Length: 356
Image 1 (tube, rainbow, N blue to C red):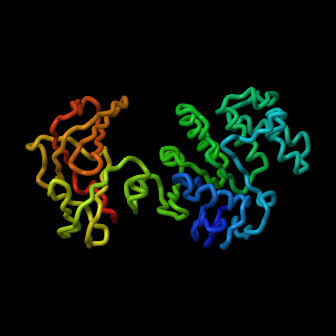
Image 2: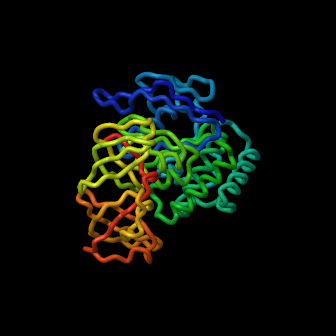
Image 3: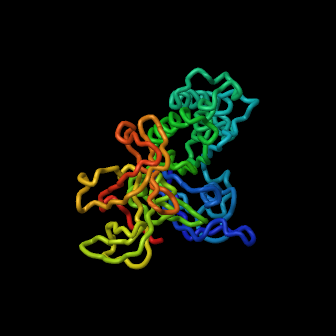
């Protein structure tokens, strides 16, 4: 087991820059997720760590070893793909034991390891089956077992849950995290699913256009995004643009739609120009005029739609911007009809001030 360090790693395909100069350190035993939209560079980063592609420039280290020019088979990497890549003509026993057999392990050693791993992934007794006889979730767990049969220094997973239905995907997130914690293995996971990343990761690397936008825990990235891209990509958020007219006592005052003024905290003590205030839907509430504290931000609007999602209802409110505000609350608290006039309020401290 080892940590991973990418030092000024860059990847260019002809005239296309797939990955800008990237610096990233992954701690030993950490579950780190590369998160971002298609084409952001996350899979390229994973393939560079695996050795499937070579960097145009920069250095890749596993532990203290420079593996930049080392082929994949000599890096001691475990890999789990989206399609699992199990050998269809081999039994589960032979699939799991394949890497051990290739390394010259004895029959008794292989059998003991196979049984150990089947217990770990909670699938004892399936060793005589073939991949076609397994469900998607079972096949995914066997793919993990095969990847860690000969303990790798680092486990890489490239969107392994993408082909599963929602319920199974949610249960497999828990299973994968359990297995990773038991093995204490350094893991790099690639996904474009923000919920998946937040549920599973010690840290998340948000990528965009071949660059790292932000690195942090799920809480840090959700509650303190450093850019409009991160704020908008990770979770749903309202972005209210306005011009700064005053900065005082740690808060900026912005003039926004309806010629209204709203406030948001200033991180560095000063703010100027046109900025955006980001506020999560769960921080908004619909109030009567008498209920609104003088210190609250408040905007008047009209309901233009609602979505019932079981334990939550989303309310879309037109306040005169390009996009309506989105509010989330318990269904019984926001039983509103389309066209209803409403006042939306939130605490200034719940806003996040971002560059426009």
